[in-house]
Amino acid sequence: MNSFAYPTHQHIMYYINVQDLQEYVDNHDYLGSRKKEILHKNWSERVYEPMRKAIIHQMDGDNYNQYKTRKDQLYREYIEHVNKKVGLTCNSIQSR
Image 1 (spheres, rainbow, N blue to C red):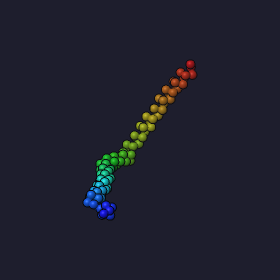
Image 2: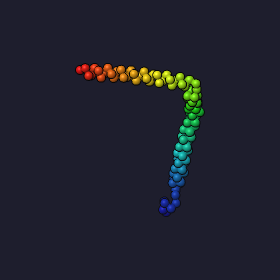
Image 3: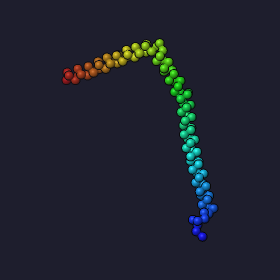
Image 4: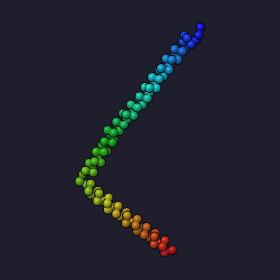
């Protein structure tokens, strides 16, 4: 009798175990991707959206012009400070 012609009980059990394993892997992958989707949704609702709304509120608010003016002033002061340092460095290099 040829063993390939008539599968034994072990062959059938091996085939069933492979199918179960494939179902487990497929289910595991699906659950992993679903978990990521739920985590992203929760993060978006709890962190991203409130922060985005607060930023938009600040940018559209009355204080924005004050913030912009102050930021521009600080930037000008920084540029002046850097120019002074570079000027001193250039003078000390030229005098040598």
